[in-house]
Structure formats: structure tokens, C-alpha cells
Figure: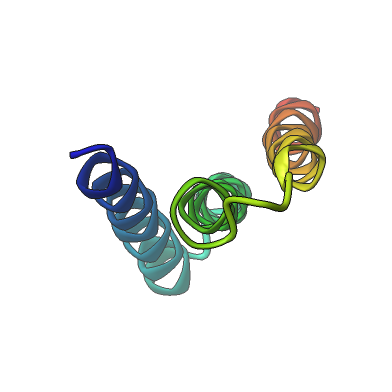
Length: 85
């Protein structure tokens, strides 16, 4: 059951990233770009979660997941700061 939940979370983040980046390509709104990049990173984090918990059970991928998640959220924070100036 947890495999399905992890996979659905990854697919949801991927769908959000695709929609945000597609919106960016249509409108050229930079905030959509920053948000899309954030969700692309969150997709990678969720994919690593699936790999960590389901595929590679002997290997701990949590430091990589945390690093990618931190970079993703920092991208969004930088975008918020840059776009408000």
C-alpha cells in the first residue's frame, strides 16, 4: 500500500511541475518557472523516496532526498525574493 502512495505522490509532483512549466512557456511569467523548478526537484525527491523504500531497501538514500528537497525549496525562496524586487 505504501508503494502506491509513494508513487502517487511522485506522479502528483510531476504533474504539478509539468503544468507549471507549461504555463511558464506560454506566459513567460518567471514565478511559474521558479515554481516549476521547485516541483521538478520535489518530483526527484519523491522518486528517490520510492527507490529508497521500495527498490533499494539496504541503502539509505535519505541524505540525498533531503539535499534535493532543500535545493528545491531554496529555488522557490530565491524566486520569491527575486520576483518581489
